[in-house]
Length: 627
Image 1 (cartoon, one colour):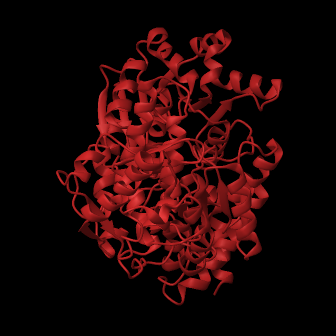
Image 2 (cartoon, one colour):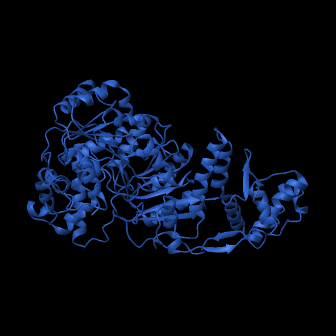
Image 3 (tube, helix red, strand yellow):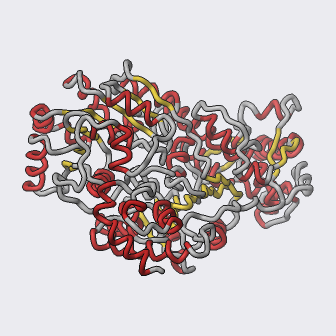
């Protein structure tokens, strides 16, 4: 069963210094895993990482979202002498982790700007008294000498640097304060450090090592594969309607995240979904702080909320039962795309990553790069990121293979992405490419004109529109030579030529021109392969989302719903997200096993000692009432 990777709430909690159950310093990691978290075995290379850090070694951990990174520093913090100090980039993330850890009996607290003076003083005193297993800090607090002086006065078990990719100036989540974290090694050279991230290219990986002075650390690189996520990329055709169809047919009542490029698109999409009966909320940096906080809180606490957001929303949002992540605009990089899609299915249950992708996305991104501030090297970096993203979109091979290959991992066809389930055809597109490029050349050379895709396609299809006739484009030799393809197919040709660098975008209106590579195509020296979309729709996943009860035994389904209702009441009373009480997977096992005593309930995965003490009798009463 998937282990928890505790996430983010917006409700500050008091310091937890009197846990229900206590695993003392010196316990083995396996004992802590079972007694505190309710799991019987580690996953993947968790045990190796935890043993290494618990033994005092430095580690750099690259592990996918939902892979159980948090346990890799939480358990060593529990079993080592002193307090584990966790550097976390988001206040919401540290608050939720403290909530979750407190419920399983771990003495955890945080220091950040949301606290009163008295609250901060209480946390500091608990740390100095040795009454904390874990202390969370934002990186900016280390700018303040008093924070470092406080740490000096206590016993530090380890430093954990979460979301370590934030140190990379090449990355999509760069945080300048992370550049100061080399001080951890300089000031406390004997304290073990563990840096963790869910995504890092080789370049980012190397930058993390250099900037955090982790040259002597042991590296642990887990597979980036998330086999429970089905990756699908669809041609854009009324994307809001496509999104609504996805939600209605595959994810009714499920929690999901929809990413849009602009704030205006976020608000329009959220309004569209709400008008069509989907409980959707907007989230972007332009909203008032209290609105963002309220919307985030509803998303975390209520079932079935769809959050429509810019990429301002995401890091630290560890809600485990997000069943789908949708993109209505092309992400700027594979790294960003992977990080965002990784917010689906953190509980290990079937989930969907869906992207609507079209010609205008490519035109817009190319134009933004050409007009971006910065030197030529910066624009080349942006172009390289976009080229990798376009290669993922246009591949005729397995999406997962392409995605994992970007992170340097080899794999075989997954059988669970759209290109595996409904393979597209690779065709010789040299002649269509020549016709299109020839039209661009003739407009430039004969008329000294440049146009966007729409006008080029009208010329190729022989459409006598007012614009065509006004510019006398019907006299061009390429007028009407492209009737073998439909308008939509020609748009696909333009999109793919842009992706392959055979067309260039320029100007405010996204006009198209040839590139240095175009000549080889026009002369017949370079063939052009194009992707032809299958006529049938991609097969849908045959697995239902985790929120449904269709795969439970008929007798267990109503019990599961009764347990969810009980959990919802508990979560509301305590002011925490429902999944902090128990994950769906744990409730499903309880509904199936139907324990009648605490001893049997204790054998359920995810029920540790503290939660058994806190909730055991109430769960048994709920089971008895459910019949």
